[in-house]
Image (cartoon, rainbow, N blue to C red; front, side):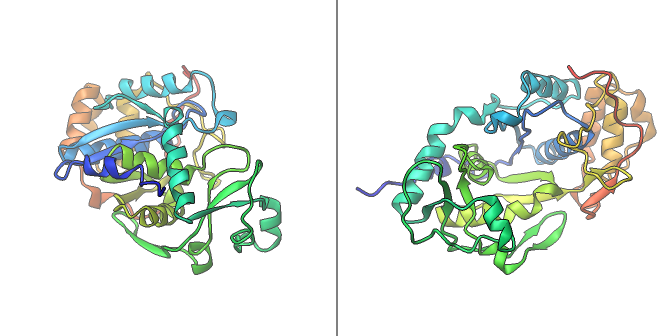
Length: 315
């Protein structure tokens, strides 16, 4: 019996006239200034459109997660006046839907098992060449790869403009389930954006290239993708991205007005200095009311101000 697409039912529930955005951090540590930029941009874009703003905790990679990080992230968002409109979705609650989607793709002949390691792929240039596509491999310790029949070499981004990638990378059969038994990010993010009815994704430029793969998966599932807007990454003067992996310190929750003002300035919004003495709610109200996506710099990276981080409060 042919398996039906398990995601079609969620598409039919998608609101046709309501903006739905989201912020989806991983619980690998507390929020840093780079995370605040992405959260604030996605929030302002949603609220300026009179839409809904959701929060999703991407907890599908347990080895990278820190105990209590999810609660710290949510507490920080509230401290900075960024309140979500629906219950927080945890990806760890979505495993059955991921499995159902994988089963559907396998049933349609759109995926296959692969035993190739990262090291072996790196030896041939870093682009997977479809070695296992016709081997019909079964068993444990296999990755699952998507049969890439809808390559996306480019897409139109609402901040960055036309974004492209090399044809060989666009055509690659990429992993949707990992050899270590974990769900691949590309699968989980697409399934959950469909499940939550997300109409636009506002996030950092570190996810520009993965967007092409996500659009490939949308096309394979025969579901229209959301729109995308990628804001600049905050980097250090040495050129390092502010990230949890790079040890970026937690934002200081005792200074929300200052940091929100800095984040808005980073995003090209030109907030008046007088807002530094306003309440958090007043500042957020101003940010939403005066939000202008077109004012965000189209740079993929910008050196962040020296003052917006402090490691005094990691709770």
